[in-house]
Length: 156
Image (cartoon, rainbow, N blue to C red; front, side, top):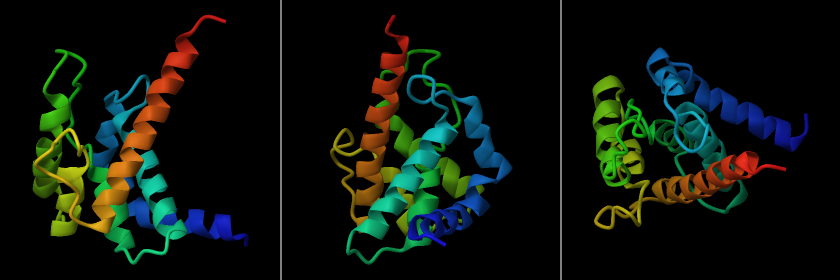
């Protein structure tokens, strides 16, 4: 088996228990960026964070990295409906509270969720390697999703 295939299988195994949970699957009902669901966004962030961890010479808690990334936007509402201007600042705390309520999250996972919006949430910088990787992956995926959506809308 090629290294990339083995890496993909390892990610899928780590993501399955949380990513297939019916409570997490509810995120498919909410739009995140452009036309991307919150579930698909969280899965992309988890996959990218995992890829970063595999590519960089860092010691990380891989299972908690993936689980924290999958739950980082577990806020369970459509922020587009009311044009919530505070969503970017408020949703990490909401997602963390929801994750703590519905899952047995570790402090590392809670920290990943709480700090993923830094630097917008200036007082909550990432305090672990795992949180930093998710924060970076979140920005990269958001940019890709937003630009991709806008490019698809441009008439050709």
